[in-house]
Image 1 (cartoon, rainbow, N blue to C red):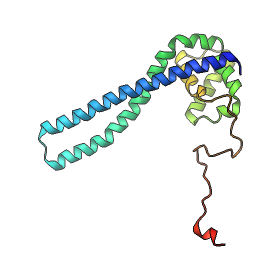
Image 2 (image 1 turned 180 degrees about the horizontal axis):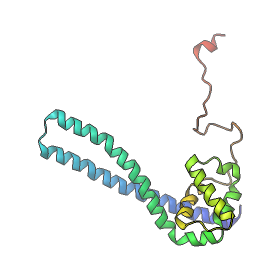
Image 3 (image 1 turned 30 degrees about the vertical axis):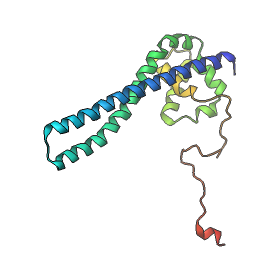
Image 4 (image 1 turned 90 degrees about the horizontal axis):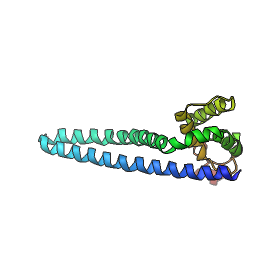
Length: 177
């Protein structure tokens, strides 16, 4: 892989990590405020214990869902803001196509389904000479740079990547044969 691709990947990984940490910190603050708000509201409402318990259980279910979606939404927004100044330049040098070629088609196929489709759509546009929108381009870069081009692709049946593969477990009956 070319040095300029490695350098760009390192810069982009740094921006991605920073945006993820920022999203996590903001989400942590929002979740803490929600929890404190729920506890203060329950204390002020003077509910009977059964109602207070039901409200706490509802909050215990709803708050993690809010946190999950909030951190993802914030991560995307912060990533787009962080990479905003770089996107035009990266599109001009066809970073996505060059990086995908360096990584290899088999590695791109290892991405999760949604990310793989997003990357392949943007790659197809870029290879046809069309300029994909900056937001789409930036969002396609993020999952692709997570693939390290120096790590070989897993071959057929090459390791359990947590995608439905399983190892055979011996049962106690198998040892007795």
